Length: 461
Ligand code: HEM
Image (cartoon, rainbow, N blue to C red):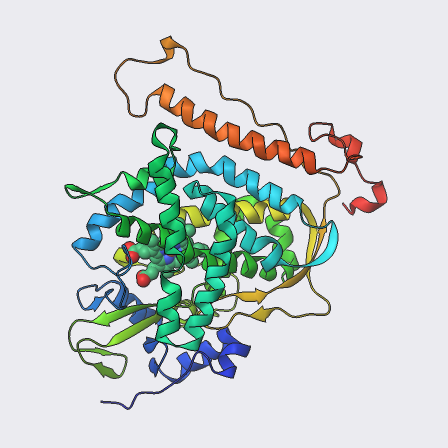
């Protein structure tokens, strides 16, 4: 058995230039041992082998049960069946207008011509609003959720089990309070993803509270950092690649594919874990049953044996090889939401700016393990002076008695109307608040754009 190489994701070389450090390690050895990530696998082929063989590489790799992340088949399949429909095409279509509205609102609040830290001003607020909006959670949850992410990262960095155990359950009480409020609401309970989840069955029984909390935790605290990191990485990449930035501004249909390729080059999520169920050989290393293993997305997606010239941005690469959203039975069920959200915010950012450039004075600061992406990413934006339309949301039309076919459809046109009406009531509140926060001299949102047109010399186009 070959002696294992050792490494530390918390060492200075990984803190200064994580991507470069992972590349260097992958060239030196196919697998290596670390206290934080156990036996880590660096190559694409070995990573895929682990992902596609859940019998040998179990997901029961941590002390806490996490639904469905830490489960193996057949239990895992039963929970995936519940979760996947929440991200199907119909649900995404329903959420799309909300996502567009919040993207427009956030970008419209950025300064017109200034240097900003994209993480604080756009990436985190966007990730918070997207995930909470998707679940129907109130704005009051944003701050505790944001604080929790930072506490959890600090506890993981410290490597202290006691600190991790303390912080692990801290946000659960916020989720439990949200669930309790819904149980009390009776008929007034909102019809949204959280309420639907509370009424799900697994096999012949209802989901219990621990399972519901675990699922909701994975959809929020589990992904907030990854979503925010993705926005920061893409915005910073476009700031430093002016011709690509302009190409996407001119051809927005390329944005989704471009996002996936940028996030292949620079991963927002570092690693996930498995545990061996039997003795197995990985790379040049023999493992016993019960050993913990990590797959490193940040390294596998830059393996030059699969991605020729991995640092080069190429839209023509085979998307099936990109492991951004994983592969196999644990592949990300939230990928449709993540992709739609990233496409929405980057499209709006590009449409509402003339130019995004890197800061002339400050470089971005890399996040430290276990977080990916940047903690700060200063970039300069020059917004279009033309204020985008912020049209008053249109009230949905109430169906008449003749619109119901009488076949007991689920949902019926009247149910759909009630959902749309509630959404409209929320949208109109947000729209009213935007109008109220406009400076007194500012014309109303529905006034013609000509009123706001900048002097010709300032448009730049
Ligand atoms: C850019 C954003 C995202 C990235 C890069 C990402 C990436 C991933 C990856 C690589 C996995 C596989 C983990 C493994 O094999 O152990 C995964 C799993 C998962 N993701 Fe995402 N994800 C993102 C956003 C989301 C969102 C928005 C949600 C839900 C709201 C979500 C929910 C999940 C869940 C529940 C799992 C576990 C699935 C299972 O174990 O069967 N993800 N994600």
